[in-house]
Every structure is written in C-alpha cells, then in structure tokens.
Image 1 (cartoon, rainbow, N blue to C red):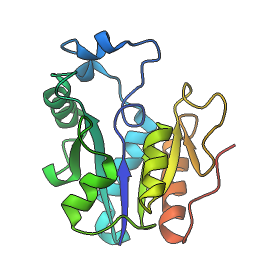
Image 2 (cartoon, one colour):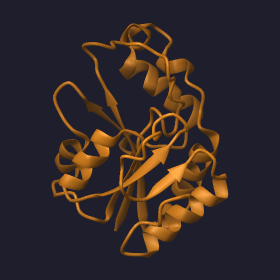
Image 3 (cartoon, helix red, strand yellow):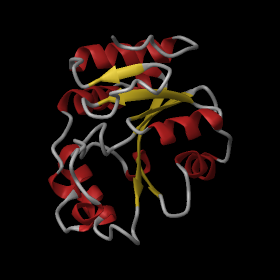
Length: 183
C-alpha cells in the first residue's frame, strides 16, 4: 500500500518568508496561517478516495513544544478548522526536538520506510532525511523555498491547480517512481 504523507507548514499551510523564531513562539502564529488551497483540496480528494485508490493519506508535521509552546494546540485547531475529515491517526505530530519524521513513522507502523512511502514537503533537510531512510520525497515549491533548485527530484508547485496536483500524485501512486519535476 502506498502511503502519502503531507507536511503542514509551507505545504498545506502558508510559509511566511519573513517570520522569526520570536514570531513562531507567539500565540496565534500557527492558528492564523492561511491554507495553501490547491494543495489542501487535492489532499482532501485523496483522503476521500483513499479506500478506492488503495492508499493511506496522512499529515506529518513537526512541532517544537519547548521553543514554540503553542505549536501543538494551534496545529490541532488549524486541522479541526481546515481538515475536519481527518481522523487523529491521519494527523501525526512529530516532536522536532527529539525525532525525525521517518523515526515517527517507523514507530507508528512498526516497519521501515520504503519507496511506497511518499513525503511531500517543502524543506530540503526533511526530504533528504526521508530519502536516506528509504522513502520517496517530493519537493513542494511554495514560491519562496526553491530559488536555487537545490533539491533534485520530483516537484509539485503552488502554481499548479488542484487538479494538476491531484493528477500528479495519482501518477506517483500508480507508477514505481515519482512524477517528473514540474517546470
């Protein structure tokens, strides 16, 4: 079974270019992030069709409870507002202070990451770590994070429509390798 994991910050929710660590620590920061609507709607369609497609869909987001104490509660509130159809098991928070995303998935599923585990993320270190663990990584280009095109591999972009994102992910699911990088 293919497993599709979506990062939240910078993928499903906006990435604020000029924010500081102080901003991230403020009450209301995570709760007021605007949705990346095309990506969010494509993900919701995948969730709705997961059984028929033979896939599982999950949000996989890092939180930092020591530095950003509101990150846990506000990400849950954001989920409830914009992704109410998700079960708790489909919204996984990773304590970024102590673990990587692949570690959390190994813990949850009791097995290693494989190429059937696709992570859609905007942050190159997360993507590199996922590949190193054996997974398939897809870069989400949100208009801010890919100026030098340092990630080599498949891409989805914020310029794509909901349908284009959905179709690209379906192509990844139905082939042994990710869809080609978006232009």
